[in-house]
Length: 320
Image (cartoon, rainbow, N blue to C red; front, side, top):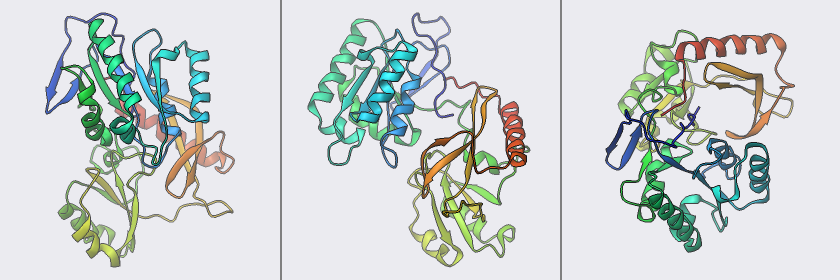
């Protein structure tokens, strides 16, 4: 859900609307722009950048920056074979000590030179350049590293108003009338978090979970007990923005103690392939297993019904 389908940018349209505020570019679905896709490494080094490959459009100047790792290159080769992407649509950086795209863009002179040369080609071809982070929470650090390499008028893309509410926090708004959710609250500041923890709604609840609404793959999630709440009130700074704070549920686990985490994939208003199981290492997503061997048929059907109701209500279009 983080990546809307990019529109055809071969010809600018008359109704193109582009706004730039504080170096943040918001594009409507008719905008003509070439996308530069980068990923933000925090808890997943390989899976997330490989996902970003699917956002590129064959036959365009779209470019993705990927870590140079055998498994990522297998994914890239597969994408070229199956979708018509070409070698000049990817740059690879050395993993180095910490393996982050941000570090590479700051210190890898070869990569910086290649990005700058690509950007100059876009200027010659009359293309605009937009930086598309995999995760919106990483937009500003990546923009700071890339801005000196890109032509004037380039910007980082953030989510549009039409997709801004499609996150974990939506579950705890009055608009949610179709998805069962734990007792929880959408919190933008510590006073809201404290008010929820101390409310009658969760009286008797001893354990809670914090989930950044724009986080993914377990990034930024943590548990705390009621006894630890005072420390959270004085130290938590919302480093990834707004959070959903929920009662921690007693969830189903496998024989080895790992959590059973199911998920649905969708494309616009259509569900794909049924229920899959997320493979987790602690709170970190590591991949999918389909079909899930751990989820009974009755629960699978319940999940599908909930998912269908959700996409009907939200009508996601996945476009900027």
